[in-house]
Length: 112
Length: 115
Image (cartoon, rainbow over all chains, first blue to last red; front, side, top):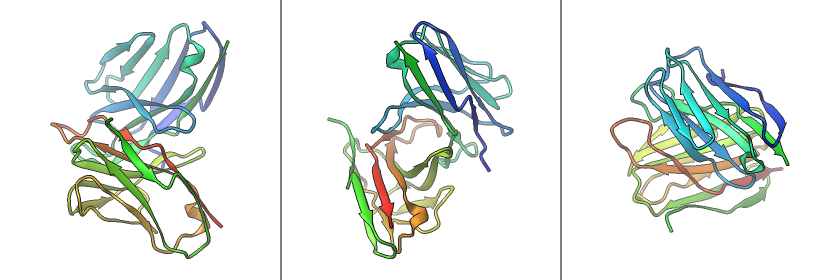
């Protein structure tokens, strides 16, 4: 059973467009992380959100944690080819545990 | 340079032939973990370790063994590999802070094919 569902699975857009990626669960998470993975490499952490309703910004990337801590979103403004990659959300399965689950991933391609 | 290293990066083997994938980190991290990545399934945790001699099962531990005899090393052992273990494997490590949301640093991955 996949506890973290991401949508869309694939996204191909033109440079300069905006996009939003969603990470949804029926379970409550104490925190959620977003990672980006490029071909041939391991995932790299972008952000961690901890508080329900929290919004964090990282340059053109905006991350939001749902009020009920069951979902999160990643919004990219004016996407650039360098944003191309696989975006993964992840979180601890139970509060206080180090057992992690990852979402199914969103593969983004930004065309110049 | 702070990093997680894995060896080998690529491995083709046959069913039943025992193999070990090594993982080493030079950041003095307490926490280490193994994941496998398969298309459409994301990353799934195999085993993790909170410290030396402390290991626990993740989501998909069947068919795998691990050991943590030294803080820096966390090898993944496949005693009798089968074709359904063909996958891309990642090792990760992190500090253990005040909550289970510390940054995990990932190795470059090991692509394993079991024929």
